[in-house]
Image 1 (cartoon, rainbow, N blue to C red):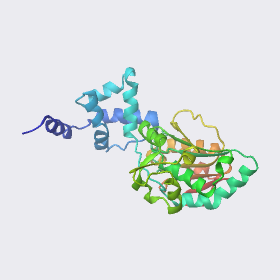
Image 2 (cartoon, rainbow, N blue to C red):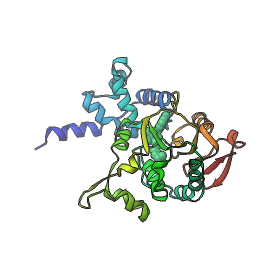
Image 3 (spheres, protein in one colour):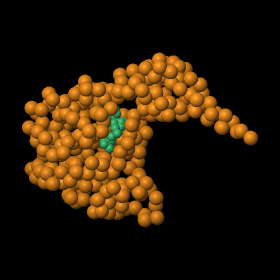
Image 4 (cartoon, protein in one colour):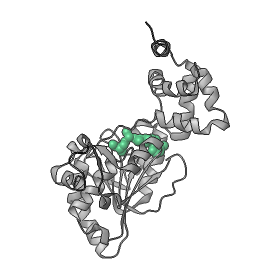
Length: 286
Ligand SMILES: C[S@@+](CC[C@H](N)C(=O)[O-])C[C@H]1O[C@@H](n2cnc3c(N)ncnc32)[C@H](O)[C@@H]1O
């Protein structure tokens, strides 16, 4: 016997996104986030948005586009954008950046904080928070008295789902396996060994503020920042948007501040005068 859900999923598996609807969705995404969907990516649009068509009881992408274009449906439009962002991340991703931070940046921050300087760090495009908590736990492990200094880490993203996870700061235990043992022990120090989910300790969370920020809109940030991680965000943008983001970030860096970018990303040539490569995909403001 065929169930209704089998009939439904058979119909869904045949669902395609026609060219005009794909272009309309890609245009909205580019205009509102800077993300550039490659032209041959309609299967990604189908797989990421099919749940929304089902929820709204719409049967074609043309109907869906008409729906999200209505000003009364801003919330559904925001869900569409959140669904189309790629939030892949993990703890200690590109771990050489954290090694550099400990070796090079941290001793300078301690000294500056001792002289009364406000220390601000930023995980820009933080996704679900693994990046910012890797940084915060590393900072706390190597600087146990950090709470006595004026140190804050900002974590920003546009994806509502990712931001909710970052705010909850609770992760499946196995996700911590990529964290070096000493820092992992700190992350686990308040956790019950029987729990499958691990919540970051209060002292780690206390360093972090999680906020919505879209690089395409005005940035309500209060720099200067001594270090910014903006990794694996710009790869989804075209050159003009990349230049806008990286120029904006460099402007927010303190003198000698450090910018960490993703392994396959490049700084635009016009920033060469301001930024010196000091390690793998790691630049210091001159
Ligand atoms: C692949 S994740 C990278 C996460 C983390 N930085 C890392 O390297 O593991 C890219 C993140 O950039 C965010 N993003 C995309 N467009 C953005 C925009 N216009 N403004 C802010 N964040 C954006 C996405 O929501 C996503 O969470």
